[in-house]
Length: 262
Image 1 (tube, helix red, strand yellow):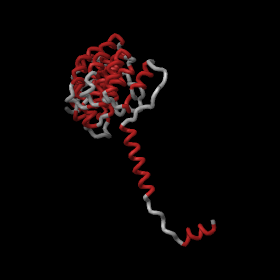
Image 2 (cartoon, helix red, strand yellow):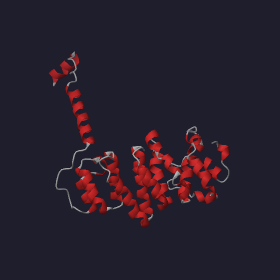
Image 3 (cartoon, rainbow, N blue to C red):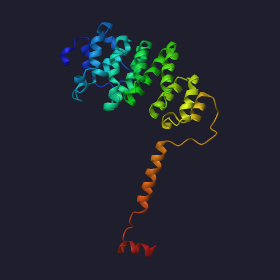
Image 4 (cartoon, rainbow, N blue to C red):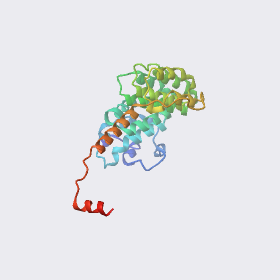
């Protein structure tokens, strides 16, 4: 795919450039883009040539503008094709995909739930891709209250696989359910915590969850240690050992004189 393959008005997206200082998403539909242009927008959002264009060129940002436009169009046709972008989070550390694609799905709406559910359930996909898909379901439920129960059911079903899920995925699923105030999912959360299959650095421990849901007023026990706590303690211990074993400076005429004077 090359820049020349896009015609107006979609081609206008090629010249919009870096959106980082824009704040809210612009109104892309004001450019004259309509549902008739959805196929071209999908091609642009997935265009590898544009994605890997020179970072100084404006068109490198056009896939971002394209997927935002698809969201504003509530483009049902884009629900399945855009799933291919989630893998970029794991493969390339693409924060733009991780941050914005869940928002795009939140605008597309409930029609995307079945394809997102299939993706989330497939352990062949990367951890952070699946985390992004769960966040997309969270966004759909937030924007479309009538879809809330279905989205919660999909996320909860995946949490029920806590024994085989990555603990970080379990933690992120719980975080999304907390965001949706899904107290009905609390029993499965408790089981996941009891099985020690939750990354506690994501949304805290079981007591934190109970307090968040209003099931408890305050903690009655110490917060459980996380793997990050253990790593931090090891680092502090190593630094302490290095400092204590550091050779003392040799005595010099200058510091000996200082010592006598003091």
